[in-house]
Length: 181
Image (tube, rainbow, N blue to C red; front, side):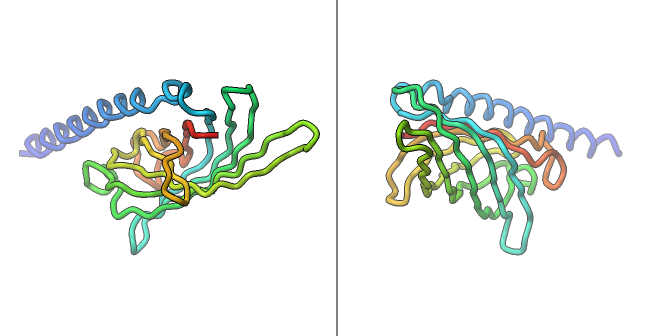
């Protein structure tokens, strides 16, 4: 009788894995920053840490990263520092659900660029990354809005937890996005 529950569990895991892989491959293609570069001014890429901690009111996400953005029109590079936080009610496959419910992550993006005759110019931008229902811990697309609710970009991030649920895996992430510059 042990084979029955084991086979059933293996089938569920295989189905979930298949859905995650198909969904992730579509998301990667769907929000590729290079595909959007022609319509936006800045293409960005970065990496860092993403800690996800279960607390009484849900799962707390804390993102911290560093990257660079390139202005496609004038070939200028900017350094960007990211700090973000969010709370979700579930964690997709890691909490027994198929998807993480849609959520917003508040992100402070600090851009530093070198401007001739002016030196370093720092700009801090409050952003809201709107993440639709997504699998976890796979690739997640997001839209970017500013404090006024205006859409300013699109992107995707992926965790390096490698199909393990927090606190297992590596708490690192990679993020790629495009936005108006």
